[in-house]
Structure formats: C-alpha cells, structure tokens
Amino acid sequence: MSTQEELERDRAVVTLVDDVWVTIVWNDPVNLMSYVTYVFRTYFGFTKEVAAARMMEVHRDGRSVVSSGPREKMEVDVQAMHSYGLHATLQRSDA
Amino acid sequence: MRGFVATDNGAVAQLDDEERTVVARIVADVGLLLGGEPFGMTAPVDREQPRDDEDALFAALARITESVEDPDDPAVLALLPHASDDDRELAQEFRRLTEEDLRLHKTDRLRRMWEDLSQDGPDWLVPFDECLATASALTDIRLVLASRLGLDSDDDGELLRSELATAIEADDEPASRSEAERIWLGMLYESLGWLQQSLLDTLMEDDDDEL
Image (cartoon, rainbow over all chains, first blue to last red; front, side, top):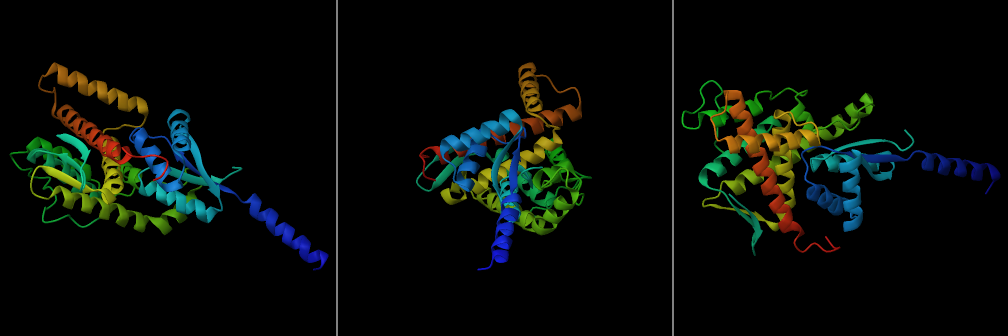
C-alpha cells in the first residue's frame, strides 16, 4: 500500500466524519407529551428515560436533536417524524 | 363518549351516534384535505346548502376543507411540514421525494380509521396493531383543527381551554355564529385529544422497557 493511497483513504474518512447531519424535532401545541414519548421509543428505540428526556427538551426548549448521521439517514428520520405528525427538520450538525 | 380501554381484541372506545358521525366526518374531511378520494359513499359537504338538521355543526366542518388544493394552507403545511425552515432548496428537494408517499400514508391511515368508525354499534374497536396508526391519525386531525383554531403556541392551547371552560360555565348562547363555531371546533379538538390520551394509556399500560 503506497503512502499516497493511505493519505487518500484518510481524507475520505475525514470527509465522512465532517458531514454529519442532525434531525431536530420542534415543539407544537398539539402533540401530547405521552404521544411524543411513545413515538420516540417506538421509532428510535430509546429507553423510557431517554425518550422522556428528549420529549421534555422539545416541550421546554422548543426543540431537541433526536438523531445524527449521514444526510440520507436523517431524511428517512425526518420523513418518519412527519408521518407521525411531529414537526422535524434536518440540517448539518455544525450549522 | 367513553375513552379507550384495553380488551382482548384491541382498544375499545364508545361513541354515541352523533359523536360517531361527527368524528367520521372530520376524519373524511382531513382525508380530502390531503387530496385523497372521498371515503365510502359520503359525498363532501355541500357548502352552499348545509343539511338542515346539523346545519351549524357541518357548516363549521365544511370550512375545514375549503382550501383543498392550496399547498400554502397552514393546515396542509402542518400535515406535510417543511424539512428545513431556512434551506429552501433542501425543503423543496425533500418535498419532491417524500410528499406523495406521506400523503398516501396519511390518507390510508385515515381511511382505516374511518372504516373502524363505520362499523355498527356503539363500540369503536381499534385492533392493537392499529393503535399507533390511529393515534397518529388523531394527531393529524388535531393538527388541522388546531390550525383552524389558530393555536400556534402552548399558551394558545391553554387560552382555548379557559375559553371553553368559560363558555360551558356561562351556559349562554354564544354571541355570534363564528364564536359558536369556534367553541364547537374547540370542543371537538379537546375531545379528540382526550380520546387520543386514553388510547395512548392503553398502549402504555404494559409498557416496560421492551416495545
């Protein structure tokens, strides 16, 4: 394996790590706290405690980051949240 | 109206005939708002000539769907939100890729709920494997009602609740037709929230750390 190849491989890894996106769920006056918690548990597989903590963040702070990863995965998560009737957006994690 | 309780066959709520008619109507109307085919044989409400018997009631519901075909309708946006509030290009791309699927998914879910509601008898049975979908359909209906009621924040929700409490306590005829409609839609919104809560309670009854 040449040095050049190794360098290129490293750069590829750096790019991948840099391009992290997040899914954000926003507060709304409609959704019930128990429903939001249940959706977080069902879809993301959070424990009761984690799901409740994320739900409280949404309720109290107006938003919570619920997942992170490549953009394509975040698009899937946002679509799922919209299908549950939650308002979700995606953005670069450093944005 | 009796909230959902768990039975061997699924979650069961009880609605009288009038409640059932109203709930089925709003389910069908939200389906129309999403651009779906009318559910069952029920024709959309004739906005020019509301039925005499349930005039005020259905006139208020008719306004729910008056902006079908308008993608900028806030109620439609609540059902199919933007995936980004500041990146227009991303939001448009996301909409292009997902909107049709989301519309179909939500319409199918509403249609199933409408069919469950159209069974004979006072029981509204929701099989266990449909409970989450029904809870989500109830969210969609409440999103539309909230949009029509102008509920934008948690404070607006509190305000509506105290408005309704005052109206019930006063027991007077509402001052105007629009006020009567607002109270009526507000009551429907609250009732559906209460039903949704009872449905979630049955879902979470034996909810330990494994879903």
